[in-house]
Length: 258
Image: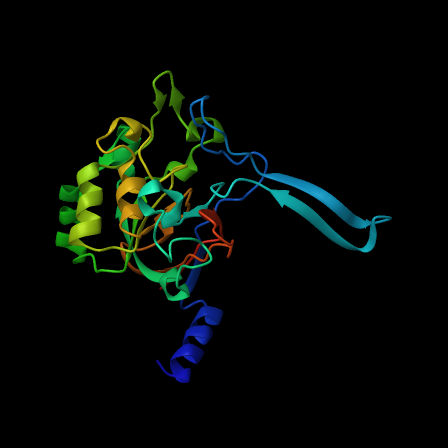
């Protein structure tokens, strides 16, 4: 890459030839968060506390205190988030090599299937079908599962029932395929977490976490605007906060596309 390449990139972004698409949901006190069974510790919702706003507490400045769990809103899952990835020396938000935070994306559109079945599971067969049309999934690229789930209301987003949440996600063999046969860098979704709502009953349970993070790969959850990306060709920027020993963090995911 030359300086001219970077100058051309900046110029085409400024002119709109290269579009910048925001894949991030707004973060506020109404942002849905994952709820765990009551015997486990729970994550806190996002909270914004004003310090001052051009008043006696700070006449010329406005600022706030923010607090939330690392996995709130649009967020990044580092390998160290899961027991299978806990021993990687580069598996936390402060140790992940920065070059891994910019990568191409493959967008798998299963929005129709997910609308018909909230428990829809992405399979390797579906991925092979996608590859037959769009080309092979390359190593080091993202798989983004488009379900249009982000278009749901806050009330319908988590989709809880008596037997737990019902949201689409990947099957076990799908995660085995992506980690072992395609060596992707990570897996991203529009739902609150990278696994299907009923994935606690899979073997192994929570395969997107167990297998992705066990192979030192990443996750992205609560994405939006995946319908604005092509199946192949976009580049996404996924830089989490550089929290020391962080298991993940909220972030603003942006995509560059033509």
